[in-house]
Image (cartoon, rainbow, N blue to C red):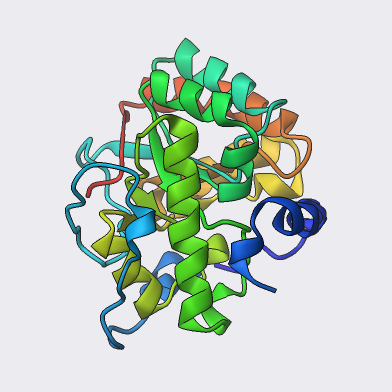
Amino acid sequence: MARHGGGRGWYGKVVGAALGVTVLAVGASVWTAQAGVEGGGTPQASASATPGGDVQPVAKTIVHASDAGARGVNITIDDGPDPAWTPQVLDVLREYGVKATFCMTGIQAQTHPDLVKDVVAAGHRLCDHSVSHDTGMDKKPEAYQSKEILDAERMITKASGGVRPMYYRAPGGAFTPYSRELAASRGMRPLGWNVDTKDFERPGADAIVATVERELPNGPTLLFHDAGGDRSQTVEALRRVLPSLKAEGYAFGFPVR
């Protein structure tokens, strides 16, 4: 699966401003391709990344399977929360009784804590998507990877009112053995995807729905976005995909941990 590099000028603008103002500490794929190679030293998490409660390590392999079983589907929503689109996504999910996993950046969570709380209150799960959505993280030093992951964990947990993210999704699938082991040591299962809907490219709701139908045999974890630009096509596609999958006998769940 190709990395999500195109069509993301929004992140360059947001990150450039937000990092300078709010996150100074951060410094200056077909899914099988995400798995990486085991190795490297054991990462050490800083105490500041533990806002409260004991942390239980989880498996460091990248998960795709659904806890809803063989006919399970995992809806995952990336890059938010966003004040325009996250509430609309939440409304659609509520309408069809579907729970999802929201992969949030630290910047967006810190900027919109009420939306993080809304996601949690609706029964959805949180996922650490790094501070700044740097798709080149795997080429950066381990110290940089650590700050991106642990600072985002802290920011999301604070914004949620104390609910910790249960997963870590590397921006663009830029996992490394180090980042996977670090996330797992913090109780965040590395999270992949099987169906990249390409909704961030805004190909039209019809195209997004067709991608889901065509690629669902690849595996149960679907990737959508609620930030990064106009997500009206995503909202419309979800409004069509969710009841269609239910009618086909699929059940909605969370990625296994």
